[in-house]
Image (cartoon, rainbow, N blue to C red; front, side, top):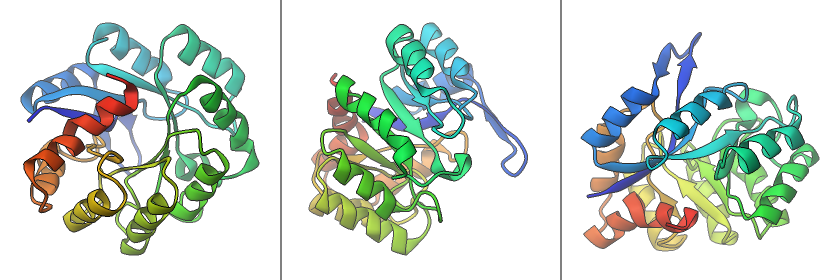
Length: 241
């Protein structure tokens, strides 16, 4: 079954994580597990050039997302370079790593740009105090025209997972990406209650292995057509392929 990975990284994650990933290892992984495209970011807001290199090397495989940090970035300079010049197709924000609340007004210029240019914004979801589903939902409510992806759809906390589903049921511009979220039954619930076109398969390499993330979807209890939506169709529709 062909797949699009809606969330993975390149680069080195030292310190607590001790993992790394290169573009060539990524491509080998994609070939082994029938992944046609990967939504890709670097290892931090300072690591976008790693994604530029990967995108230039494998333009048919990579969907590049620029990691923006509203606390420290010159965001106008960043979107001019990576979106307009390099052809990046989305924006990623990491409130937990970069220490800002997801719906803080400092995020609004990024969202205004995304609205004007019809670009999706993916936001890490599932850790207090900065990246909780309610804060991301408030941002989605303020910007209904922007497609907002909740990366990890609550991650490992059952309360946050359920809240991600409830918020996505309320705001139809919220998309749920399920990497690192351990509850397969919640994938089925989200597909059946949020909407069949807003649930996205993801791996979150190098933190997770494809076999784990794939098996989680395959065993969630949905029929083959629904699995095709999650693995491929929904991400393809989101980026217009």
